[in-house]
Amino acid sequence: MSHNDLSRLSVHTMTNRPWSLAECIENYSSLGIPAMSVWRNVINPEEGGIGIDKAAQLIRTSHLQVPALVRGGFFPASAAEQRAKAIDLNRRCVDEAAALGADMVVLVVGAVPHMPLDEARRQVEDGIIQLLPHAESCRIRLAIEPLHPMYAADWSCINRLREARQLWESIQHELLGVVLDVYHVWFDPELDQEIHLAGEAGKLFGFHICDWRVETRSLRSDRGLMGDGCIDLRGIREKVEAAGFTGFHEVEVFSEEYWNWDQRQYLELITRRYLEAS
Amino acid sequence: MSHNDLSRLSVHTMTNRPWSLAECIENYSSLGIPAMSVWRNVINPEEGGIGIDKAAQLIRTSHLQVPALVRGGFFPASAAEQRAKAIDLNRRCVDEAAALGADMVVLVVGAVPHMPLDEARRQVEDGIIQLLPHAESCRIRLAIEPLHPMYAADWSCINRLREARQLWESIQHELLGVVLDVYHVWFDPELDQEIHLAGEAGKLFGFHICDWRVETRSLRSDRGLMGDGCIDLRGIREKVEAAGFTGFHEVEVFSEEYWNWDQRQYLELITRRYLEAS
Image (cartoon, rainbow over all chains, first blue to last red):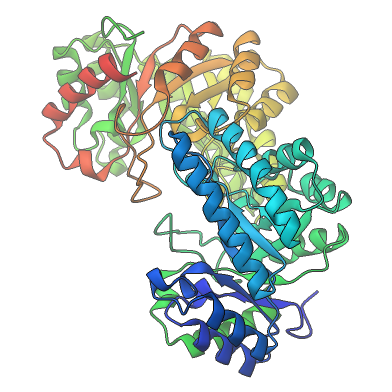
């Protein structure tokens, strides 16, 4: 079944990478989009962002909801000092999420080329355990996002919902759960089962949508907009909803092609495709 | 432990794509490489190949061993007629493998964009079952190669050793087993267990090596040569050998970069890297 309205739609600011936070807010609001997931680059002054105080003020005034700050994580590192720095940075992410009124911080957990993946996974678990007390004091949820195995070398040693589940089962904390991004897990034969298990346990914190282009031209920035590719978006959404998920459907598309479009026209297409193809 | 010699090395003709079969044979032989896995393009006249009879004659004269003909498979299709054609083509692959004195046909099982993956998987099982009697009459083994999930849309609905195992466990035929290509499975948390299970059951028919470049530039043709990337090649080889595998180590590298090299220099590098980094 299609959506009737935009009441569950959230757009990731990175989807409209050419826009500043203010432009995102203005355009999302004017099209009736109720929520926005905020990437750190539009906040962080070092990356041209407007700073957390101004960002928080803009968002408060806008009445847009913020399901997620994107992204923390990147826990594993060869040196202990670097791992400690990663924890500090993650605590700052939690603070920022709290300042923006966000519900969760999305964790792209990290990986280090040549570090055995099971060692990286241990370091991720250790990092999350160290981060949780601060998340608790700010009441911010942490959502592990399993990334497609093509990112296993350097971005994420957690590549399946099952692996994320092993973490939340092991750590057992109400503020720790998962994000299901269709791009990373659509092909998993255990998808139905993992959605069910995560939903049942109340661990399905986020739901990201986009599409897999059949002739994908780049590993990093050639995602499709809903309807451009071959993912059974409705089928997955129905399973996610049957598992009890009631949060936003967050559109997260990295695409050199779409970043070159007029962003307003692109955003209008996003809303149409959301209604028709997801 | 490094290799002491080239006695277990096999090179896929596609690794040296610019070469004809005759050039592959001449160069592999002159460097003391004892085996070669033959891709159909160097045989098939429609793709500029020399035809099966001449190919068989060249190979017999060369004394090179041929672990595998690459590749059959591509079973799923929307129309029954197309699926029947795929079976016919696979029977021809089996005939060619027999004519070349190859041990096995590698199966890249196929996928159809928008076809649910579980339907595609059923069609693969059905196709293999239909192909087996002919494989039996020719005494040619069929080796399912799980492909990286980034090929799940259009090349292979079987993306993990576990999924391949479900097929060989279900079909139960002595001529059906798997190929482990490090490129497709290196990140799998169940890798050790699956190698053990396949080895124990005598199902580990082939072992393909290359490397995962950390900054992979293309999904199709940017594989690394052993040592270019981050895969723990020795660790995986030791597990494969501990599981009882005694076959060839087949170098299969699709790389636009290396295809642009002088192929003789490249082949010399392949032998060095095989000895030092795998």
